[in-house]
Image (tube, rainbow, N blue to C red):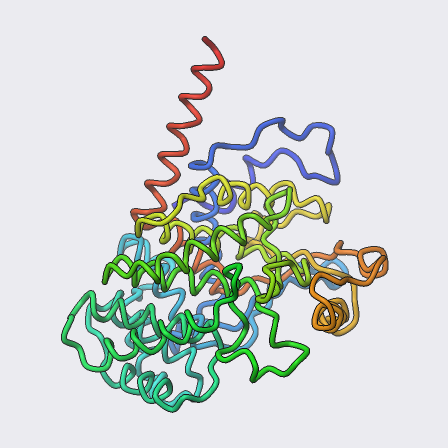
Length: 416
């Protein structure tokens, strides 16, 4: 595992200090991914609460005169499950270094205990997923809770329904007879497919109408990637062509809408598949969530969007919106987002209203009024957890190796 100091020595420029000397070509995808995953392993200890085997809500960078430090805030059960999934993809020896002697299994087992007392269905779903994948033992009590939530017919966030589906598939992959998992998979699948828009975009809640007239049409980026991942895994596990078609349709649409510099935009319109609001651009979408979902899709027999994945990675280096670096090697962090300077998410609220009135209608001059030139200097542990999960598995390694081979073949052709 590389050290922060070693990586810092390799960095010879910053965009705003020496832009004219920026390299003309980016590192290979393999090298970039290895650098980012090494950074994640170095950065996760800052958010680890070793006494209770938990992870914080965030790690925030603060500057007070000459003081430059990271501050840990809160705790989050969802994030503990995600980090456990990510760390389970690396060697146990490395896990113990990051977790001060503990392992991903230890984190998961502690999370299972805490999940018994949480009312957050998203946390329950993620912990059930981690229990199946990390410990190899599906937790029937957690699955029973998820089945009851779905059976109630109550509205549910799209992201949570997707995690439920993925948790069910992970559990069935370990034990195809485990109680409740098949029912969860069936109901979550049907609710997702029913809500999907004609262009492939998913709304923020199931059913969308529960959000009211001004938000029913809006789905965020997470509302797209987690269904892609869940439906792709379902298709691979059960040979479900309808699920695979839905995952392909959504993936094709978000890739079609991807920004010229690789940006994965924030909010989409489920009615016509247009962009509702572009900003913030979240770093985790670029380096982890999009690659994770799109690699799962390709691995499940779906479309290959490798070019879009690597274009998204490029944004972490080019980020034309901001001059400040997002990959903070000196802190082993990737700053959370590049967003607008605005009060209380004003641009998002305005975009929701205008597009509710007429799809695609945006107030002119919004980018001048609220420019997207601010970096949020915080990093949440789930972001680094998903980074490891996306790239340290066999699918991620295969993708970057294949991309490297393709680049080498192209170079040889150019030279001949």
